[in-house]
Image (cartoon, rainbow, N blue to C red; front, side):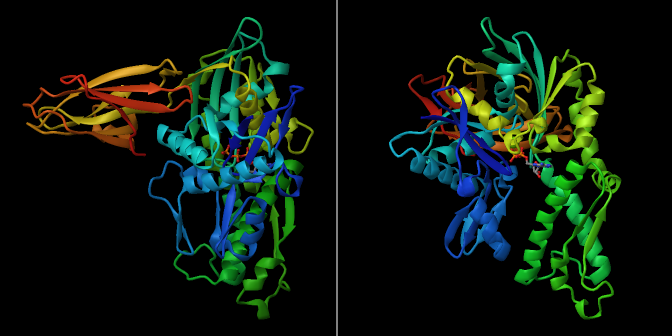
Length: 503
Ligand SMILES: Nc1ncnc2c1ncn2[C@@H]1O[C@H](COP(=O)(O)OP(=O)(O)OP(=O)(O)O)[C@@H](O)[C@H]1O
Ligand SMILES: [Mg+2]
């Protein structure tokens, strides 16, 4: 059975196409099609989704959420009750729950094959980790699909024609993507060609919630004298619980602000339970937050600036845009929406939040993935957003980044590039390759930012003098959208290896 999985920072949604050509969604506890992307490791028991949210109220220390934003972080981990979790382990637990829920619903199905979506800006290491989590969960991977392409697929039937260009703006819980996609095809749209794309890996609805939390923490500090954000204080469980609660309240306040598009007042008297001045409280242990829309906007000023800069991106503005598709949970934000409508007043704007069904606006990406999962004729050409290179040294020992694939390259399963490297040392028997994602000037290390995404060692090379050993590396993208690397000793043609480089 072929399915589509939107493995979101906040919510995971799973869809498939039924025999009538309609998309259905997998239901989790309480009949919800949304599986919150979080876990709670609670006294040796692994809880995923809503039960994890519930358990987190009493055990916030066992709770992990929004871990997807750390998929690019090799070091980041959470230690709970002697167990260590990394972002890919959390993804695995979420996907395992998906697999188990599918198996319960379809006991006769032996194999679930999935198209799984990732943000446009995900690096090759993040993609590899996601694919590994899918495999570990016992789901077979058809393909990794970029989220903006999935969004266009979801809205394609009713809205778009071949030859048109669609500008997707997707702001979710933890990431933001923009992509301009040209539609191709003779009989209906079957080709999705990404002309330009960009994104911010660590910007989403959670950051806006964080600004509201900050206001609440500040108000609590000024009335109780206690600083809940002070990480040097050793906290009792109840303070952690309150902090967790405030984070949830903040998200609720944000949703209220967006829905009302005006000021909100909420009561959060629970926070008073940990106040050390309870006995002398002037306001009767009542904690009320009055937040005007303008106060919220100014607290998020820099975030909005960042969002606006990405939306009115130069690489996108050089094209004529036929449609704008604003998706993700943050498509509910009236301020961003107004900005899009004002900036692109000549284009047709489709806003996912307008879908009348309460949850439908959250399902666009999963719908697109489900459509892709059952149509082999759909062809996608992606843009590589992060340049890839290998750090080398010239004869004088000066470091430079040898570009393997420059950002902006068109990527599909036909992509292949060859690079040959020679030895700097003498009579060595191995060569180490470190693969980096970078932006900036590859020849100027004072003007470049880079991040290692993997490495491999080619060993047992015949010892030769400087410059005589020649190892050719071949970088390809397979049908699943995953980068593969192979290497060959050009002095010994029998020595060709598929490299499973470490991420
Ligand atoms: N009705 C709403 N009003 C305001 N904000 C909302 C609403 N519904 C969801 N959101 C916000 O949208 C965000 C989640 O969006 P979404 O489900 O698209 O994210 P995701 O797909 O899990 O994350 P990502 O795409 O970043 O991996 C959260 O910050 C949430 O608070
Ligand atoms: Mg999303």
